[in-house]
Amino acid sequence: MRVKFLTTISLASLVVFLVQFFLFNVFFARWTFFLIISWLSGFRYSPKENIFDKFLNQILMSLTYPIRFLLRGSSFDDGSSVHTVLLLAANSVIWGIGIAILIYSLSKLARRNKAI
Image 1 (cartoon, rainbow, N blue to C red):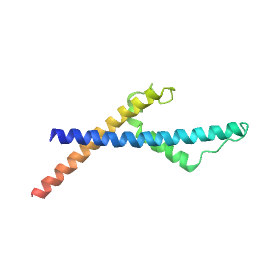
Image 2: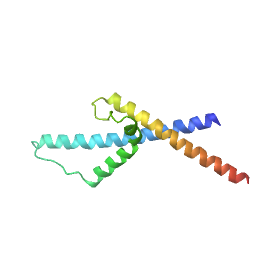
Image 3: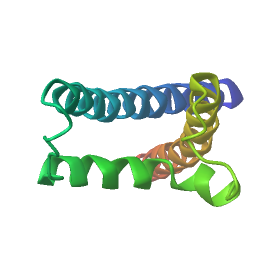
Image 4: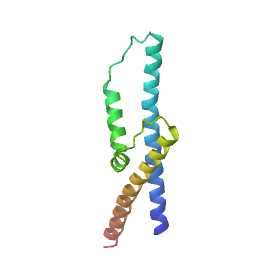
């Protein structure tokens, strides 16, 4: 059971890390695209934040809440990509443990109900 639980933690952490990394890259790509557009237009183009940007920001804020809560002085905007990846990894481990406990508890409950 221990190996199964650790595998569940690992898989949940990996999935959360990949989702966070993908969303962070989408957010960064949109920001870079608008920066290039504003540079080409002579800094006269300033896009308004649309619903997608707000939604993406809210998802990222929700997913990164555990690490932002634990490390209040630290943030993702220090300019180091290594620091950002390490924070995303630590955050995904926190989420992975929580998700794995939930999955493990639900599967144990389902096995217990099936035995009855």
